[in-house]
Image (cartoon, rainbow, N blue to C red; front, side, top):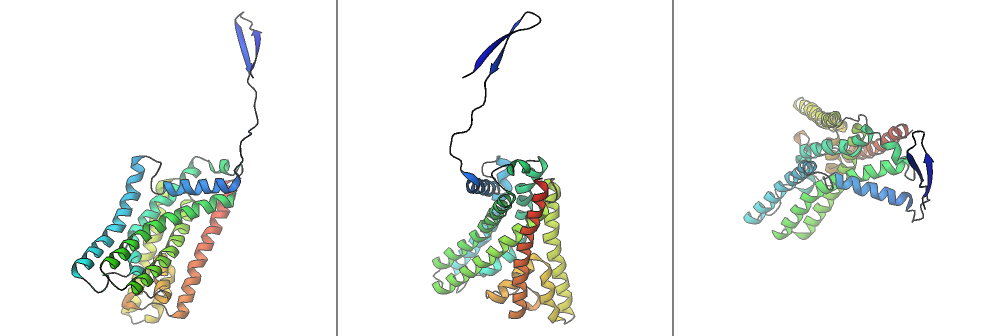
Length: 302
């Protein structure tokens, strides 16, 4: 209870000092796990603008619709024409729509981390009970989950449409499962790369430009070099060139092990041995992205 001490000022006016005091917190202490889950949930919702302004919802929701509309059109065509198969395989869809995916990563990776860096709130997260690993895992998992929702939703539309078109259930289920594995790897890889690039600068605009540059320029450069190699009949080098772009890495993994048709020139995908190198490269980049984020936020949190 507050205790009031009357004090007589030099001017003769009466003033009061209110000794309010402090009381310790007696409620439940939910700990690191709760903090980690809360940060994951908040970051995942923020990736689609939920809980934020209407302006923040426009771009992610628009990109989600853009991802799903072509799948819905393909389903409508397949049902109307009673086709024997879908126009595009499950594993090919994300590669075709990679520009939309890259734009989503470029817009949402900086949103996830740049504001914390800009307003210097990261040390507050690390005060207690959350630690560096909790912050990095929550942010990484949230963006990867948001990307998985973005890339898996059109595959679900294709799968439901294929069943409505009465295509073979076993073949469609197998293709759908392979597509989910492919987009899961893509989501982890793109989320890691996007967060690493965005964490370098607190300015969101610079982060967006840097992510777009890395994802799109690398794909364009690799595709150009592969086309040149194909024109010069140097087909053996085409799979190895594909190791230098995130998009072609995923393409190589799924064409080697998930039954996909390669988008490489001439349809020349990696062999099984080369595919192992692709898998190791993808897993290595994901692990390296996580490690770089840990190092970055250990320095920021000091």
